[in-house]
Length: 60
Ligand code: SF4
Image (cartoon, rainbow, N blue to C red; front, side, top):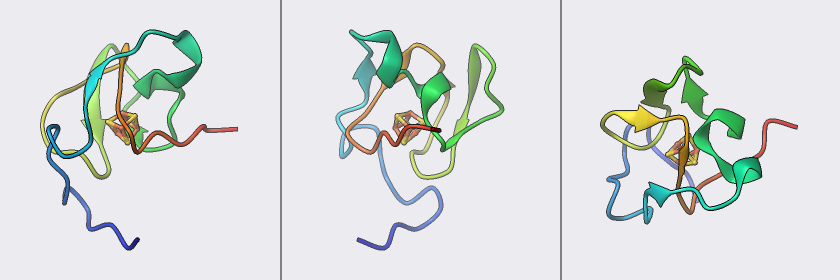
């Protein structure tokens, strides 16, 4: 799927609190800056480091 920058809503990606630390936004390659509060390349709105969504991709 080709994703547009800020093309996804939190609802569409099932944005939610992360239940496992390894899938937190702070571990995802799309969060910037990786502070406690930041943004995401694809999901619109304020992104929290300890949340996650279905578009998660590990930085490693
Ligand atoms: S887990 Fe989802 S909301 Fe969080 S940074 Fe990755 S793509 Fe964005």
